[in-house]
Image (cartoon, rainbow, N blue to C red; front, side):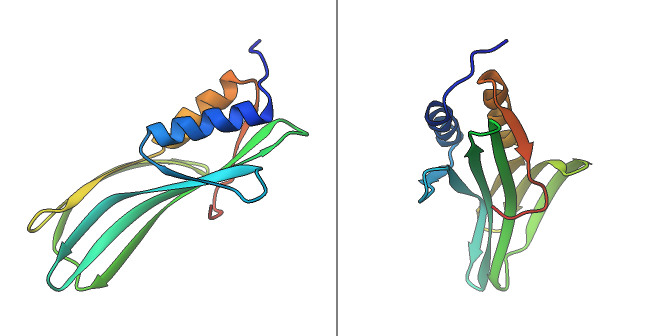
Amino acid sequence: MPEVLARRELLDDLKKKAGGLGLAVREDDQQQGYSAEVDSIGAKWWFGGRKVTYRMSCRLTESDRTVHFRETAVERSWGIPPPTLTVETTTISGWTRNENRTDVSVGGGGGSLNYGQVRSVLEQATAAAGWNFHLEGGRMP
């Protein structure tokens, strides 16, 4: 049985792991959790552009020792987005979605998104700390 970490220790550990994966972490005002995001895919040209941002949030409730996790990928475009070649594989099981997406655009730009990587890392860290992990599917972070 793993040793149960205190809420603050687990929160600091989860923030460190999210930051290590390249996400920009922002502390929640009530100190109950945090949110993070990273621009994964971006492409521009003279007529417009496209950007894909991965966002997530964690909220910890100490009463039932649960980490409530939300995630989403938001795609924005403006003007006429550049022509892009996209290779994507998606696996969905219930609310759990795993996706690997790589974009290559005309004139440079593009990137890759590994949707589910952050969730799996934080889920393992939560279990190792003796807490429960709850994915709140279908809800924006």
